[in-house]
Image (tube, rainbow, N blue to C red; front, side):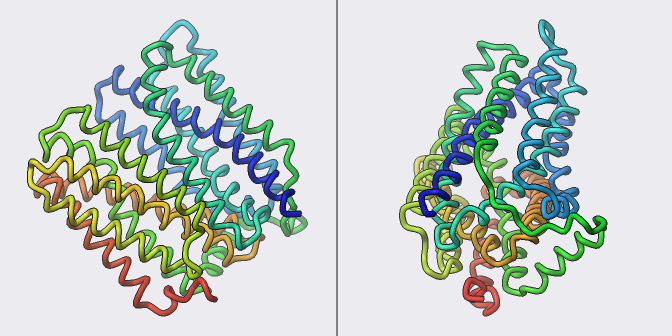
Amino acid sequence: MQSSWKKTFYTIWIGQAFSQLTSSILQFAMVWYLTDQTKSGMVLSMAMLVGFLPQGLLGPFIGVYIDRLNRKMLMVVSDLVIAGISLLLALTSLGMNPRIEWILVVMLIRAIGTAFHRPTLQAVTPQLVPREELTKCAGYTQSLNSISDILSPALAAVLYQAWDLSRIILLDVVGAVIAVTFLAVCKIPRHEMHQQEKVHVIKEAFEGWNILCGKKGMLGLVIVSAMYTIAMMPISALFPLMSMGRFGGTSMHASAIEVIFSIGFLAGSLILGRWGGTKNKIHTIILSYFLMAISLFGSGVLPRGGFWIFCFFSWLMGVSGPFYWGMFTPLLQQSFEARYMGRIMSITGSIRLITGPLALLVSGAFADRYGTESWFLVAGVIVTAAMLCCALIPSIRNCDNA
């Protein structure tokens, strides 16, 4: 039985590794293509919006269908739709530059497909993996994400110089086909579905919200997660400004910081995968917040000649990340029944995806007025507040024991 779930999980995991890497390469290539062709900040902002909004706005309603439909089939269809629309763009653009508006449409449809695929995969995981192994599997998944983050920018840079965009799109199609093939051979246990009942999307979406609200500790943790997102999502956008503005570096310095952060994230993921975290997952989350707060405060007070110390703090930020994400997702997965998991994962994802872009707007204006390093200090205060909420509010501190 134990070897059976491991075989299924790792088969799906390997297929997703190919798909995630090729998708990330294509995403970089599309952004660079839009930059080369338009030199327009408005176009890049639209590209960001079409990538975020479908998942943020549609998530709670998509979750209803994730809980009602065959989840394996839903992942297969999502992957095929993403691959199909990309293939259509590649075939219609052979020998010429793809039109900007068509790229934006493709990015929108891909984002909708991802809005179905990502929470479905998260909902399927607790159907496959024993509860006591969820944290370790989350650590391995975080390792996959960080390896992709390290490799995809470099591979995308090489391929973007050597190939036209259509060939890179075809590479992503190959990645999707591999993922679907690996998924197709896996047997995923069915969850309880109520297909005989008529679908009431709004009602069932609110039912998912009410179920989340029924567990005050988990609702509090989701709110704390939104605080963390408000603090941290702008940091990734401000890294280049910190490297090149505050410390007077070049694009090479900015790239080095991204790689150092990703290496730290990989190290943290591997440690979590081996260790498994504390018995009470909230304690590991508190540790993550503590390390992140130290890194943010330290970065915010560095003098202009402190780039190499900033490298260390960036690495420490990366290390701390999996200790949060690798605990948060398994906590959600173990705290709710499988039949509600699609709605729970979609709702919590939507909360983060809506608060994140709003934080980007606020942080950008704040950094322009008070300096990039000032946002690192603000983010440190917010993360410290999140840490104190986890430590001092009983319902959150004990939600892993509920």
